[in-house]
Length: 235
Length: 221
Image 1 (cartoon, rainbow over the protein chains, first blue to last red):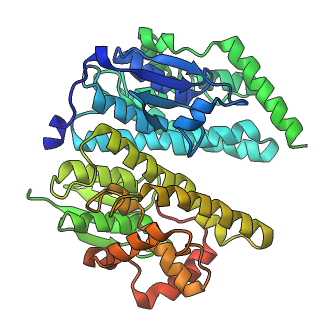
Image 2: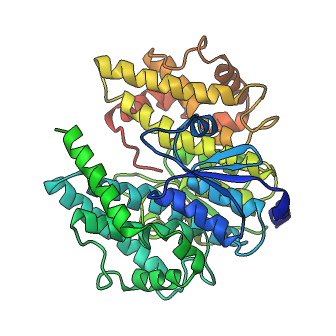
Image 3: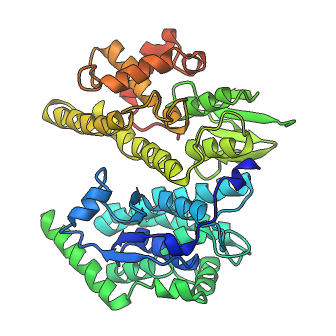
């Protein structure tokens, strides 16, 4: 396949890589994870989302959101777009997306599913109550079951080593568990999702995954503050 | 390549038509299956069990769902007439703006049919801001893809649909004065036979407007 030879290997030395991120954002963490896995040194800029920096707005004028990767002055927003950019620019191991077009399509399909379905429904679970929340909980449980099926019998979503979908699914390793604890709900347990739990154990064996840990207590406080603010704003 | 390509689509879906356009741009022969979304074929449900939606491309019995995933798959499998540029940064920008169209512009357009009065005015304002982003992307270019039609042009066909809808309903959200580059782009692409083949046929356009106004959430993706 000709496209495989398009991307050149970068020499690490002459690159300037910056990440504008936020410690509690699963989208931000996945970008850091990819860079760490590839051994790419980067400068990290922590953004206060209630007071976004002028630089963030300059690098992502369209959405004004994190994460943004800035590589030698060129800005790339949107975490999934960033992940593919990283994989295409730095061709060292681990290669995040398979060489096979069909496997790549499947990986992109599941990444989209995670973002457009699971994470989107999780937002509904967080910000609704009563019947609406119950319905959202049912919905996200069904969606997680589909993901459970995808990782059944595999050490990684990609197959042989950590890859694109594992990185996108990183929200399950720390973020999701913290969130459900803060919400006082129990969607996600080893009993209900044994294969995802096994996958999590495999992920935790990887140093860089642990380096991208979202500190639990800090995270619980952060979520509770956000929820309280939301509740008082919607009264 | 000795290939078997089947494509499950629906005539009124922009997501479906964009994949058709991609197939035609690469001159890939395919068998088309028109889906009745109120009575989906067992094949569709088998090939896209997760979403049960069109479009789905089936290549040598392997299904690919989600229009943008399909388009990238096609670009990587059939190397003629490449959609995405070679440079990783330019590829990232094409993907970014395609996502912008699907995640921002399309939902706002869908909202338009469901609003009235002040809310409608605000929605139109929002659409104008989003269209400005795309207008800026066209500066100094013939197509979103540069000199030739590419990945982002395929996704941006929704602008042609918006223009057609405006001509029929009389409600022109896309004005020539505010968006001259988009208008030039529309005129340029509408001269292409393949583009016209993937638009709603004239005789079905009134039906299509009524359909769009009744069902804001497209049953396809």
